[in-house]
Amino acid sequence: MSPPEAANQFDLLRQRRFAPFFWTQFSGAANDNLFKFAFTVMVTYQLSVGWLPPALAGLVIGALFILPFLLFSATSGQFADKFDKTRMIVFVKNLEIAIMLLAAWGFYAGQVPVLLLCTFLMGVHSTLFGPVKFAYLPQVLDTHELTGGNGMVEMGTFVAILLGNVVGGLLVAIPDIGHGTVAVACVLLAVLGRMAAGLIPAAPATDPQLTINWNPVSETWRNLRLAHGNVVVFRSLLGISWMWFFGAVFLSQFPSLAKEVLHGDAQVASLLLVVFSIGIGTGSLLCEVLSHRQVEIGLVPLGAIGMSVFSIDLYFAARGLPPSETMGLAAFLGQSAHWRVMADLALLSLSAGLYSVPMYALIQLRSQPTHRARIIAANNILNALFMIASSLIAGSLLGAGFTIPQIFLFTGVANMLVAGYIFLLVPEYLLRFVAWVLSRVVYRFRTVDSHHIPDTGAAILVCNHVSFVDAMLLMAASPRPIYFLMDHQIFKIPVLGWLFRLARAIPIAPRAQDPQAYEAAFVAAAAKLAEGDLVCIFPEGGITRDGELQVFKGGIMKILQHLQAAGLEVPVVPMALTNLWGSFFSRIERGTAMVKPFRRGAFSLVGLQVGAPLAAVDVQPEVLHQRVLQLLQQHGG
Image (spheres, rainbow, N blue to C red):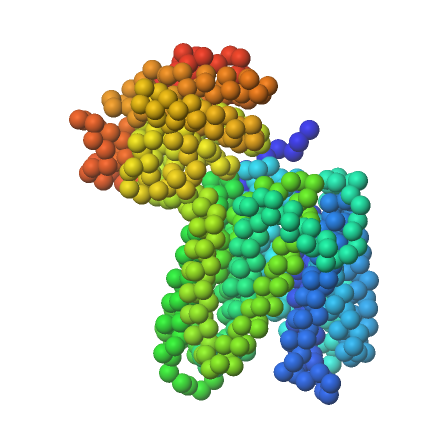
């Protein structure tokens, strides 16, 4: 028996399938950062190590931590697919305890080489955990919980990073006992993480027959080819890696931004990290609210726009600040010009949360379960390469004389170009964004019984035709792509025609006008269904001119005949758009549409009612017409 669906993302914290996993992830992220930051502070300020100058300490520690992602991600992805994920998590947490015991001795004895080894080993620990983490969620969460679950994990990770850095810095600075306190804290966090891991329910292997390929180069290439088999998934991997590039630029420059541009002390640098982390966490949590609990990749362009707008504004906010003496936290907050800087940081990081969470959820949803962890492992390799590239490019720009605000400007403009390129390559993001704006801003769009739209497998969706944006509203109701049979005339309408061409809608002409195009449309629709996709048809044959449900034509039967000839049978789902007649995009008196934008007022409520699927053998145009009419009458359509 499957567990009850969570009411919201916070309700997941009361359920065993999620809560122990969340706290396991939280403790691990906190421990990583407590250890690394305390070690960095120790070698930078407290020890004199001739062969590791303070200026290089942070760079060396960061490089050692990220190196295992390049070396072992491909192997760790195979482990996560081959073995029970809970057993993998327990193994990783046992490994963390062993590493932290070794690190504890390193802190007590002041042994920098031992702590450098532990840094590398903690990188191995995180490399092993990463694919398991993102492959576990879609195995235990319902589709409607996936965005919220990812949002909670993303929020928890950044809060843990923040707390780990703050606590690590505070503990290591305690006179006389700082190193010992850090040692105890690291071991304690590892033990707490292991205790939480012991409560995670079993998550069986998705590909237990997998033969491990120990060659990381060939396996990485194989994983990338696996991901490339689904274009949307592969481009989403690149999109996530770009987000890590973007974030790494800002995170790496916070100390210099605080000191050289904002003229603040170390407390100001910490404040910037706090603001950035809160922004990411807030954006991650907002995803579930803004998506109405579905995987809504329409939020990705919204996040990309915010990332560019606020990073560019950060350049203008920071470039003109007058020189001054080094300020403490109170003096810094006392100047209103600094509030704009913090607002830009908070909003660009919030936008990054809106950008990344739906992408992660989409990859989890659309990747084959047997290969999911390996695809995520490939993403970890790409993330590491992009972060290394960001360090090299930012360093090169600084060497070329760029100021820190100019680097932020460069990053914001580059983000516009990269995001635009990704959205042109994968128009589904742009289409979903338009659908999201239409259904959440132009209208207040509500769906009833959307669970009748299948999460997997082929289905024919049948809906009444009320307006020129019916297809966009239906797209907003389904986390999966829908292929629409559309009247060929609609492709001639500016903007809408371009959008429907992007959506790869199937044009259909009346049989009397173009018999070949008429037949070709049904052949194309049957082909999409044979591939396991969703296809939608408006059986009235055109947009209603009086608001009433028109007679259904026989196109649906043509599709079913093609499927029957191929030996296929798919369900047919009746749907009804309600309260849309009389709005801007529907016709009114004398058959006109798209006049008087506010004739129904702003944010008018419209709905979609989804009926129970019908077996293909039970389908007739009259039967479907009656089902759709019943849905309209039930809900006041």
